[in-house]
Amino acid sequence: MDKQPAIGRFAPSPTGPLHLGSLYTALAGFLQARSQQGLWLLRIDDLDTPRNVKGSADTILKTLETFGLHWDGEVYYQSRHIDVYNAVIDDLRKNKLVYPCTCSRKTLAVFDSGPSQADIYPGICRDRQVPLDTPHALRVKTDSRVVAFQDELQGLISHNIAEQDGDFIVKRKDGIIAYQFAVVIDDDLQHVNRIVRGFDLLDATPKQIYLQQLLGLSTPHYMHVPVIVDEQGYKLSKQTQAMAVDLSSPDRVIFQLLILLKQNPPVELQEASLTELLGWAIQHWNPVLLKNTHAVGCDY
Ligand code: GLU
Ligand code: ZN
Image (tube, rainbow, N blue to C red):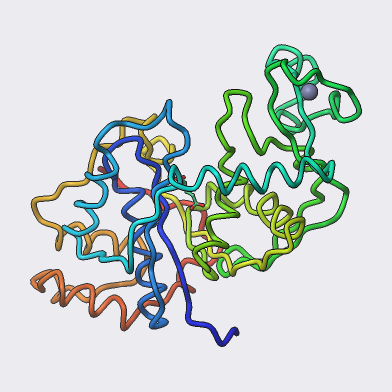
């Protein structure tokens, strides 16, 4: 293990108030960082402006505070770092590591050969000269290297990047920096070395590691925790109309979340204060109990 302090982060997108699923991930990351005497940073992933909901970043901050999940340092807003992302992309472009792509969804749909292939770009624009005034996305050139990492809960994950991910987008046609790209720069700028996030992002990780390798950045440790699913088995999200968390009794919600994190909180703790509860959880945090779990069900 590294000598540097553990630095983790929570990176919500300000697309609405926090629901139980996001709070679950936040709590896992908080406990992981605090149990290692590490830092826990907060980043607001606000680049995807069409999806941002006004005021929700502030609501998220207030919610985290209500639940006693205090972060370290200043909040990092992605939208304040757009120049950095663009400068790095320009360099990659000069080095011909990214290229413009004018393909429309319609063009790409023709190449879809089943759900597993749906996102893999067939390389149409790789060697084309695209006039610069044509609206275009930027894609990174991939090669068929195998990116492998040991996830702390999900075991060994490996991808052949060219075959399983293909040349993926780093800057969208609408000029917005792609999540995959921004996150790699942010984690580096914030010196993040322990990433705790939902299982739904496991598949994004090889792409991010590929970018880290391309840019000569170090790769953090990853822990992908289960996602909370509803009775139908769907991940709680805004799309599934997940409700905002109930702020009226944060201790009760945290107790429920500790059960969903399989931490087996003793019943006596049901009467404990929020501070006591979190103190117990930090001291007893045992993520191994979540090993190989992809989803946990909850009935509200
Ligand atoms: N902003 C992303 C989300 O809310 C999380 C990014 C990450 O943890 O890497 O899904
Ligand atoms: Zn193209």
